[in-house]
Image 1: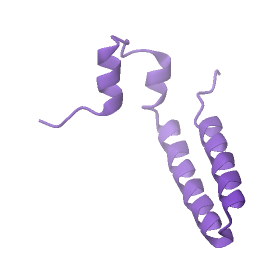
Image 2 (image 1 turned 90 degrees about the vertical axis):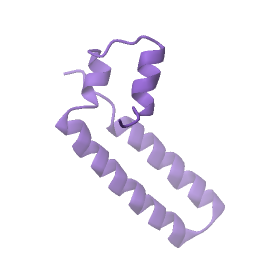
Image 3 (image 1 turned 45 degrees about the vertical axis):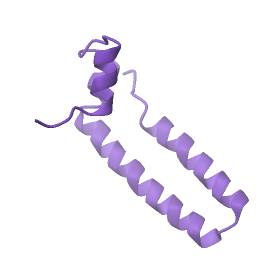
Length: 78
């Protein structure tokens, strides 16, 4: 028997419904495609951080990449 992932365990702990639109969004093909694009973006950002190598640049690039990741994975209201 495989162990349930962390999100499912948290949802069960707080008795959150399984058919909530925000949870259903994470199971769509569009979300998975965007998640792969975010992963690629983080790899590029990491390589950029390694090539520049200064602390302020690393902080700035990681803050920007984190913001863009959250904004890009946001569910569309349409």
